[in-house]
Length: 407
Image 1 (cartoon, rainbow, N blue to C red):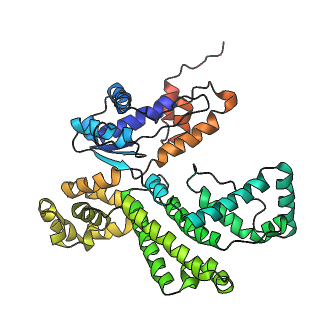
Image 2 (cartoon, rainbow, N blue to C red; image 1 turned 120 degrees about the vertical axis):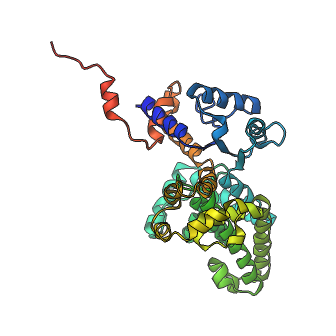
Image 3 (tube, rainbow, N blue to C red; image 1 turned 90 degrees about the horizontal axis):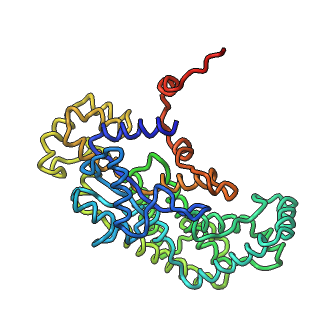
């Protein structure tokens, strides 16, 4: 079955005029690097990929994009994997994973807020660090009809850990106060509100159907939200911008200091997101707009090479109706024969990966298949069957097997 899946996928890639790849590394329970992966030396990465391409006869010239986690071995401007590939294929577009960039941009935290976050982590570790404490807290939550019955551990590795941990802590603050006989700290809610919104953006960027267009839209929307929060906080509109804090700000003597910390934190996030997600250049921005909705674009926004096709496309009433009903991908496929140049430009935008989500999904599946008790298991075939959505050719598989005749 694994061989059939591989055969079908390779056949589809060969029949396509272009394709993209995503690369990441992972170490399994036996301390072995797992594919899809890369060694920490760019030449080894290139050799691994080149060997695979040669084995299955894939054309480097059709490779238009590569998405990685941004390590120097992958995106280095001199000797990174992407730069080495560009020496043979100058048209390659290398991308730093959007999800990884978003996690890096959201990482900085003001010292005062970091102190309160550390206090929360200590409380969580105290309750979760003992089986007895965990059972007692669970029983207390049940007796008080709490929303949750347990807390979540915090880890810097998992993308959504910070926000989910703080959200659980906030929802169980009354139970925690009773359990520890301590007082709640309102500055934690500032982090919780922002981290919760960051989680939403992160979740929106995950999935098999995510592409550069919708991921970029999610990031731009979040950046605009941050700017809106700063404007509202500057005018004292806490109820709308940070609703969790409204009741506490009115009752807390240090509310002015609290709002100042929140403003500094949000401004810091704006600066970091602008650094990791700078404004697109004019040409790429126009290409994204053309791909998202060609029927709302102005002729002067389109490059001269595409203007004649653009006029024909925008005056095709049948395709205009199809655009309302079909997805962008299916619409581009349908328009490919009549308008090949515009479709080709759109395909380059849609085929390129925006994140290494599929690699992370592969690693999660591998952890399920290859446990500590099965650390010598060869998982390549099992992993391929677990990950791919390709329909098996049952007739071909059956015909390749010899039937066992009864005596």
